[in-house]
Length: 409
Image (cartoon, rainbow, N blue to C red; front, side):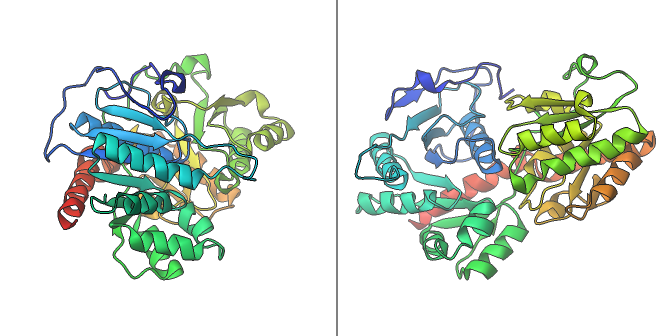
């Protein structure tokens, strides 16, 4: 199993240096392609782009590639040790002349240093701004040798940052200059091409889940510690940002709670947590809502759930919903963005308009009050994850892309 309980702490790494992790369980690797030395840059946070980038690096390491994470902190899901995983911290110089630390330049310099010192074959950056700009600068600094870079677009880097007129020219430039560009859904590919006027090819490689880690597992969740046998459990997982509409989660739960005994698990943290806690008190359900904060081993809590809620304003994919599906949990989500590419309405769960808490609560109750429907949707959710989105299917797509980029260089 890939994920262990022991976390890789930032304090173990010296700033600006690579540290090789110890070989842990599962260290025996297998290769379907030649081993590569890959630099990965992402935001090391609980957002979907950081989670996917980290999981990608971990999976690639298990397949025999040397992976070098380059960022300002250790990625949050880098929770296991492996001798092919390395971390290089980006140090940002604080100088009185700068109102804001020049992270883009510091990142480009560290990319250059790591590429030279570790003889990297390519860089893979997640989130266009500023990571692809830094990769472009690093490639330019390497001159004759050069180094190709792949940019993966995750959503808000296009729909929010990229669409901002101040950043649009730079976003478009960095995408056009990438050696290859991928998007996590057909929806995001279409938006990128149409809204930014991109003329190059943008390939779709969807998000993925390790189906050996995220799976139905009796006893994985100590459910009796949180809920009685007659209570149903609804679950939400996100970074609690406004786009996730976490107050809608509480509203949906309050409506469900009026009809059946239930508990709500809120996994994650972020700016809207306080608002969600306040609303739970206003609705009189605060004793039934459990805020777990940030968690690395989310699969155990997902396994407690009877229904997963994701009422987001926008989702380019819906990774958290996929992780719940892989655990055999039916989902109720907003019909937005790339979510319908992952969840088929009426099969793995239900889709409803964003902001329609009444419909979402009715759909959740429909699942919770019909044991046959619950079982059928849970099985369909697991089957959907296995057939389309397991890491064993998706990681080779990235390996093939890397090989092609290197050959074209």
